[in-house]
Length: 226
Length: 399
Image (cartoon, rainbow over all chains, first blue to last red; front, side, top):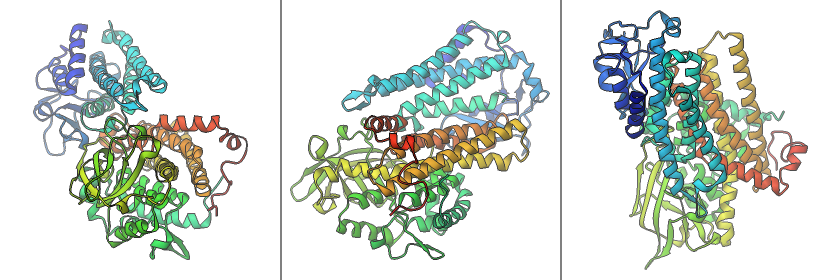
């Protein structure tokens, strides 16, 4: 039950899928590579998963416990902005040995590494959209992309993406500490925030990539220990 | 420390009571933005529908004790908006009333326009809009493409606007246009949304969904010359000058919304994490001090603009500081809870998303920075850096 994605080619494919299509398909692939019909539970029993999987999964991972579908045992819900995203949030899944169990779980660290590639893909898609927006949006006849303040912020966001990319490239879960992975996810969230801000009110819309960026934040929220 | 005087404390206490009633409807409004029209009996909603109307036009202001409030002064508005944003930023922006359009009418409208506009507001709870931002050009006046031209029997507006709060539920509002090339060719007109050729649709957003940000199209919308705001003023005064004064008025209120949202994040932690470890308590206390410091500069900015409507730099600094504060406070608040905090605490998740909207209201952070830098190069900021901020150090109305 731990045939998790573990080579860089597969991670890059996941990244590219998320970059082009958002998180749903990439998350389905990441789940399927662990085992069929499993849903990954975060340290407090949360999941953000493709809606079809959230409804049908039979076991939680990494605990291996059956998904208890008695009323009240598992809460399935969707925050309003995710309603048409194809994703669903889940609470109440079984976790192995509480949060402490997660800190020594190398396999779970592999999931966080996989997620970092997936979230980087969403960030790359966000950057694609931001660059296009900034090239076409003008102020006083000049594209925003040529404004020095914009260029500075854009560079900061790209630097964050590059830093995470440098951290995870060529690494396996055993090479990375929990704190390094948590830092990487924080960098992703911070960089995405800059890019969303650079797109003005356009970054606030549900239309791609706003919804994908939000899903990316919820993934970090559900799966990272504090 | 410029504390509120007795009069503003009365207003604050009243607004905080209203806000407590509003808060419980925040998530319902997010799911169904029409909820606000079913809350008209709540004091916050019913009063907001009749406030921000100047004394000559408002026979029934808010009366608390022996004090009368019109909410036409920036300091009064900051007190009101902080409390409403504490309840819910989406709700704050969804409230009926004169709102931003009312400030513009007050600054550049003539007597007849004010009579017409304010009487419409007082007839029944009425939503208004403020249509400045355009697709492709944002709120850059030099790039404005919505145009006013002479038709056969009237004036005609053509163009498109984006990200306009309450566009789809409003009855009337202001549309900014260009009538001629150059900085003197811009203006604004009062437009009724039932006019043929006016259409508004709701944009699906990640945040402040209650405000129903909308897209407006204007397809040969006919208006009368009497609808052009400030038609008796010089082209400069009814255009750029009037807008700048309007934004100077509005920026402290947007800043106060940021303070209110940050306070809501702080209070959510305090209410839901009753027992904090020492380092957590220290973090929460630090956040509290930071909120208070931004609240103070916001009040100073409001007093400054009440004293001098052309005062801009304190408002720019306050708005910038408050937008950053709100985002960071909401995000910090999630750190006080465990994994899945945003899924377990939908109100907290909403605060994180809503805080981002403040960045775009009344100018982005970069616009505020550029404004502040321009004021610095003109020597307008130096006095505030070396002495008491603004026109006075006491938070009482300047007359």
